[in-house]
Image (cartoon, rainbow, N blue to C red; front, top):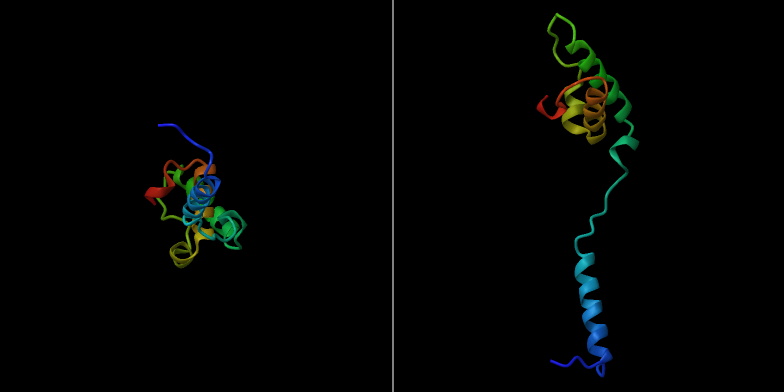
Length: 93
């Protein structure tokens, strides 16, 4: 097959079609979880949980369960704090 550039309109149309399809997967997202207001509280609680884990007395996780269930920022902060302060796998908690 010989490719002919005599049909620029077809080529332009194909490029525009591909560009339109690529844009369909774009999702509007909010700020990163670390920029959300509940992130620092989650980080502190996650870190406290990881530090308490090393003690000989078993403790329940330091966690505001309502915020953990409802706030992406708190949940991300808790996981980051837990991992940063010596916790093994924050997704199992």
